[in-house]
Amino acid sequence: MSGVLVLCATPIGNLSDMSQRLIETLRTADVVFAEDTRRSRILLDAAGASVPMRSYFAGNEEARRDELAQRLEGGETVALVTDAGMPAISDPGLSAVRVAIEVGAQVTVIPGPSAATMALALSGFPSDRFVFEGFLPRKGVDRRGRLDALAAEERTMVLFVAPSRLQADLDALGKALGVERSMVVLRELTKLHEEVWRGTLGEAAAEWAERRARGEFTIVIEGADPAVPSLDDAVQMARAFIEEGMSTTDAARRAAEGSGVSRRPIYEALLERDDTDSQGAKD
Image 1 (cartoon, rainbow, N blue to C red):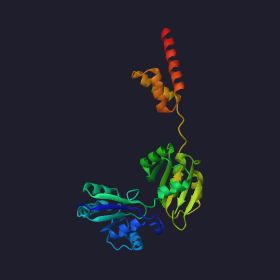
Image 2 (tube, helix red, strand yellow):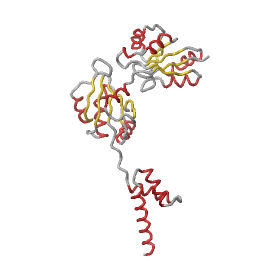
Image 3 (cartoon, rainbow, N blue to C red):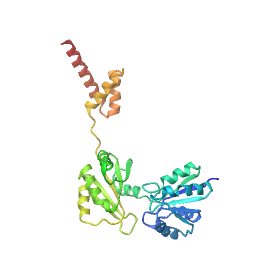
Image 4 (cartoon, rainbow, N blue to C red):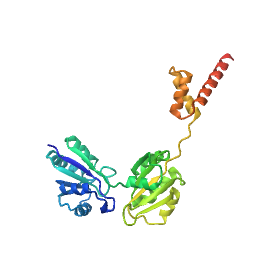
């Protein structure tokens, strides 16, 4: 019988946030695969767990693949932990899930603390729809493309930022999204020196130009204002529907649904264009 891979969400700073399920899982697992065995030893000691550990980080995931598969095929329960938070979310773990699926093992999750959702809740920005961006690319076309996409993003954005990259990322985000965009910087969540700083991207860049960035950072940025619907674009859309055989009335209705522009001005613009075309033909 195949084993079980357990993705264990771990505290993001305060060990008191360990759940009873996490403690029981760490105590009863056959082995713990850990992003950093030294840091995870502190976690296991706090849980009273003495099971063996194996390293599992970005640089050796492929090398651990066969061992993980063999353990799962042998019926073992493998607990997977990262330094903080949920494995596979901006942390190692995706490859482990894929291995488990390939060998027919069960995959389950021990839920727990999340810096992303905690930051979102604290931000005061709309949270019914949001986008988690993880870490920005460090440079090149990928970085430029991501920043350009974020500039038009209407949902609240949550990003992780390494302390060494905080200033560069704040500067780049300010240039791409505008220095007046509201945002929140959250530092050391759940830890002794937890801090929630509120302002604009421009103010944040100035603030941390004068301060040394220490600890773990999550930033939340307010989404862009909704794009103003264009009547010209809506009319072009409607004319395309007409060319496909749709009536003027139905084309105006469909274009209104697709563009957000009211139906009546689209319909009137179509009729005006038809009258102009007819007059031109007579001349």
